[in-house]
Length: 317
Image (cartoon, rainbow, N blue to C red; front, side, top):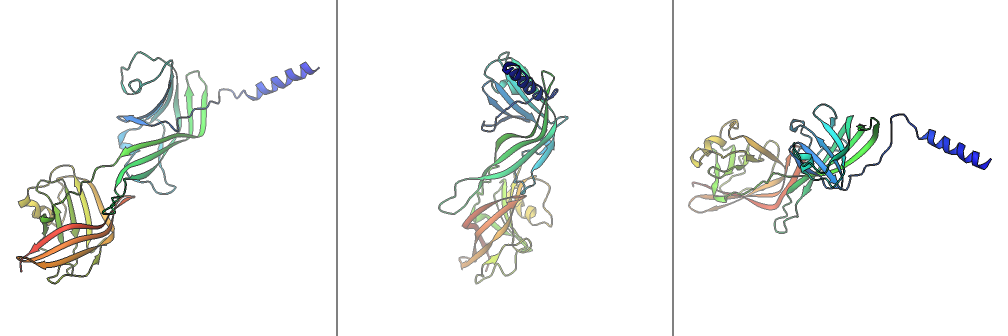
């Protein structure tokens, strides 16, 4: 009787585990470091590989923070693919990134995502604070990736669904912003609405737009706040070189910014003050300093420093 009872219990358990074609497996790549090649982001663990391909135009891993509770969402399907693959030996990047990859190890199975959504939350990583200036620049971005309601088609004909499947973190490097300005190269537009600092054939500029007329005075001036309108401070990084020094005023002093060179990144100050100290030295020498400035682009921001030199503007007496 006891043997019969045990047999009945075993049958019930086996029937309870039969869900048709839906089977349950556990995959965990969360703590594995992610790498990339082209549009492929992948993680390798012994004989397993988890990777996705997202076309660049989707801007999935844009170097800009996402807003709170508003991740980037990209539907899986078409050119957006997610795959889990396992091999009969230790897998390497060439098995994922090279079309005619190594003969070994051999892939013994593959899961291909047929539906679901890729959710990405991006946060800035900051470099160590400069102890002298207080400057704290962005060094890179961390992209936390989660698959929601993802369904895999398995090589054995079954399907596997996860309500939430954590891919983990993927790191990208921030564009270097040199801020390498010569304080002697500051110029003022004849209209007096702009003051700029840029090198001859350089690739960056720092501009004060819509300058308050009272900012530059013969006897000095009080510190003035930076705002979105008056004393608007803008840093621009270009994809190619600016004009030669003789043509820089023409470039910066027009009503609109020329289309060439193309702007790679533009950061606008949202906080801070401008301080001008005026002395006489063969004219009026205006030393312009930037205090506690915060620059912002999109949803990302960084602290420029406690007290940074914009440059020196020499005007005739």
